[in-house]
Length: 320
Image 1 (cartoon, one colour):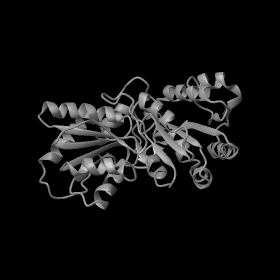
Image 2 (cartoon, rainbow, N blue to C red):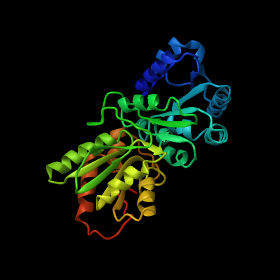
Image 3 (cartoon, rainbow, N blue to C red):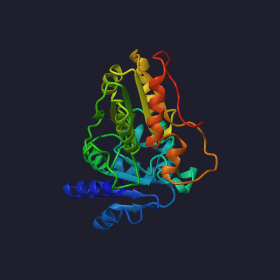
Image 4 (cartoon, rainbow, N blue to C red):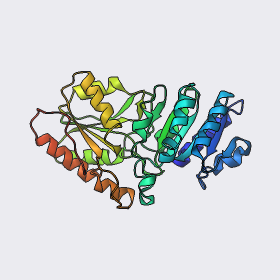
């Protein structure tokens, strides 16, 4: 999604009458950010490995009337300058765009310091901070364009991959709304981020076994698509949330909140990361298999839950 983000940024800058859009990086993004940096060298700043200063500078630029995009690896963009994001763009309602790249296990082999497994949890609790997790490059580009005029701050959680697209999504994005990718009466699958590809593939595998699944994609976690979630949950007995994130604080928590606060009888099962890092290392696909996020694991989890009686809520799945 990185190149799609930069392409959208260049398009927005070209459409502007005044040079308000800026791009700041924390000494990374080489081979990715050049289309913007070379086109607008006076609007590109490498702050170095200093993420707090990165956000602090962006806050001052936003106060001066600019729209700064702050680019870094997701865990560095969200956690290292977290207090600066809260005290600056959030509390002062400034249009700083924090762009975190490598959602979930996107930087798999780089190890747990580079795994973004808590960024949704810490960002979505900040009132006024829009939190967006596109599922593929086309939707990422649409989200950048759709939020160009938002007066407050935004956190974008982007994946690294460019080519894999989510079947049936076709770049659809509407702020605060969920996207229904398919409908089925037996089961509800709810996804966030690029793991949605695995979810759609799991739905196909379930269909081959006679299980008709609805697939709902949640790309905006703040403001949350409450009405869309209520409608989907109300029509199903069992729902599985799937995310490359710790199960606490992210999509699963959001869906459980909606179900509980609205008295819905749908049983929500959270598929995500339950355990802390243990030293194992591998690719994104390796971590998906390890934490029950591969298409096969999602299918098996769904079949297990459908075999259970309808009573009981708040079950949990995955490796712990």
